[in-house]
Amino acid sequence: MNILIAGGNGFIGSHTYISLRERFPEAQLVIVDNLVNSTHKTLESLRKMTGENILFYEIDLCDEQALAALFRGYQFDGVIHFAGYKAVGESVVNPLKYYTNNLNSTLHLVKYCLEYDVNKFVFSSSATVYGDGVSPLMESDALLPASNPYGQTKAMCEQILIDTARANPEFSVALLRYFNPVGAHESGLIGEAANGMPNNLMPYIAKVAKGELPILNIFGGDYPTEDGTGIRDYIHVMDLAEGHAAALERLSSGVCIYNLGSSKGTSVLQLVKAFEEVNGVKVPYQIVERRPGDLAIIYADASKAEKELNWKAKRTIKEMCQDAWRFEKHDVLI
Ligand code: UD1
Image (cartoon, rainbow, N blue to C red; front, top):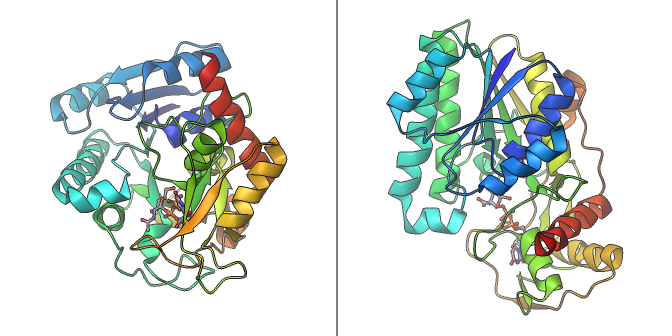
């Protein structure tokens, strides 16, 4: 089996490489990535972790010629598509960058899948497509407008894939809606490489714990939650990675949609406290104004994935904090 991992050098893609290797020991795994948000260091770590040469092509999915050559060179059996810009704030400031890149890369991949009879497609979607829907969120819930262009690109790509599968019955699609992926591989060799200032909570906490940033700003202490801070569904990136391998294995026809989350809500303050306790470090924080666009409570009902994929998020908040910290510290050493 030949599997193309588009954006396979990024945070979730690199962890998924490890899960795919475990589930499909004989498969040929091919990474394409334009390295816009990752480096060769991750490839080197993957090589160390697996003991194998990584098949890697530095290709931008917007470069159709390069992509066509890749599809000609390999008869892929499946594609997992992670490639895309993902910074919510930047997408508000520069929407065209997001629409151009995230839509074109998906359109090109789908086009060559159809042209070369590649019939399994797994897409990296997001819980952001539920907009301000009421948690626990289920796959059957209505999609509501996302609060930013990044989220809109996820919803639009979902629609492109659904329409393509409808028109091409042999083309099957899994749309995986991630909740909040955090943590790192247990080895500490791969994780969420922060490019400049982190946007998301866990990498920010880790940078503050390390002393690289002075203080964590907690956005809002007056939400209608137990401690007043926002509630999210954090999922360990290795659990998420295993969800992709399970989805690819089960994919047979039509469109399948799965929430990949833990089905549990954790507040910002609970996460900060867990991080401090588990790792024996201090994370100075202050409560500030709410961040525009944030919602109070978002968590999944992930029972569909459990039933149909035989997959469940197993790792605890404690493991997420430990692994995120191990990766952050490891980064200093190399
Ligand atoms: C955001 C995106 C989501 C994307 C995810 C990537 C939206 C609305 N959300 O989710 O699509 O998949 O990132 O992981 O598009 N917080 C602080 N201080 C900080 C940073 C965050 O208090 O410095 C709080 C936030 O207010 C929120 C929680 O921590 O309550 C999680 O925030 P974050 O990690 O940024 O993820 P989301 O906004 O939930």
